[in-house]
Image (cartoon, rainbow, N blue to C red):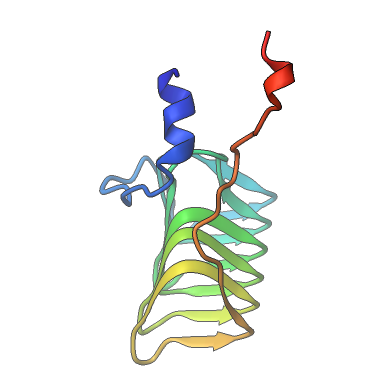
Length: 140
């Protein structure tokens, strides 16, 4: 098996400690944002924000930030506002200033006092996503 195939079985990843991209406080984006590594949002995004699939992306939404759209990443830290569903495939941290209006899907969650969620909290256990089983007759 190659390195890429082994990663499929080891789905737990650690949050990125470094930020590769920043959407500044005075920046407003109209449209979808797709990132890899770490992304910090201090401004406003009207559109979906998602990490590249099969990569351990980390999204940080700061206290003054606002996202109007669907959010998806392995690790998400929220201290700002999100209007839309949130999908954290690994960890989700809702800090005291966080305001989420939409359903929240998570594997592991930390909610601090003062955080607000207007929507459902939906836990999804470890998924065996991306593993393809083949019949023995399919071997070449």
